[in-house]
Image 1 (cartoon, rainbow, N blue to C red):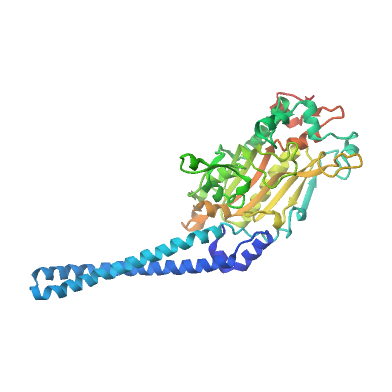
Image 2: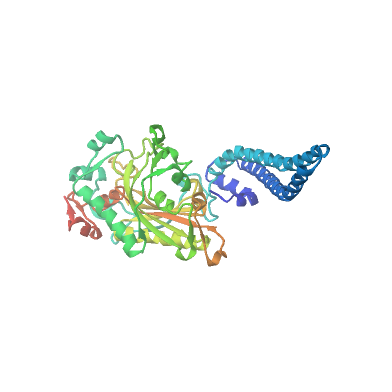
Length: 467
């Protein structure tokens, strides 16, 4: 959630920010409701203060008159009673006024809060402006020794590549037919060494982020309440991508939702907490099963392991002080971690700076890492794919957007004892089985077998070659 005071001070920034992200939100209506809300709140506070003042001042006077009333002759009693009634009536009238203003505030807040939930975090000034992912800007490329990105796979390796679909079928690594039989489209069953390779990359990535880079391992729920999804910025915008379990219709108190990333659980850990500044930054990592409906992705990557409903992901989250420089430094560090990881796997990749139209609601900045996948891309004259980059990682800088929604704050020496909203960042360490696509395709051999990357062999029981 954005800072409402910042929106009041500079509404043009948020209008432009929403327009550049292609998100429709009525900023003028928010300002109108906010002004009315503040006016009502001010009136309520004044009425309550006046009520307390009069009640305090009239108490002794009512006591004095009550004493007089007991001793007063019959002819004077009605006048004294009238004075007592008048003194009691004024606070009562103000109490009614406070109550009525409160009702007006309550009636106004749902629309104001609903609109505020739709206001995106404006992109940073150095984010490229664009309409969609087609306008993302390449920042850099990395290639392992012996790989030339200007050449085709066949020119680099000396033989025509198979797609991962062909490889998993011939090597018996995935059973799509039985997966679909049980769970429908975009489902699969990893089998034999396919499952072992999947577990190996996850374990390697988890050990890498924890042992080499000092992140704290955490387990998190993957079935969460709606406030966790709203707090992390996945609702309301991403509701159509989420699996919904309607527990409320079965007698339970709240509906539940399957998370699409461990980020939800990691960020939700400290919702409504005030953290000691000395303990920041918090560096968390988790490995969890993730679920995405892939709504709106009909016809896109419907075959294979690239775009699926259920997968496992190692995720990293950093919660730090509210300092833009520190957030930017952590963003670079987190990208550096996954670059190091992917380089250790020997996979060619590029970094893409996501443009404003591809950022989403919550991100001030985002950089994607895309691995080269020989089985993707346009078809050549022989109706074979020519290869293309495919997203495998995404690192986001959110500043205080999530932490405001989660009411996640800190205080300490630099804040003068005041509470301040934290900043947050997140990044994919590794998602599988998607990462198996470039591994299988890049490590395939001319004889159809697949060599296991050296760093994974220890997690595969020493298996060096599949097939």
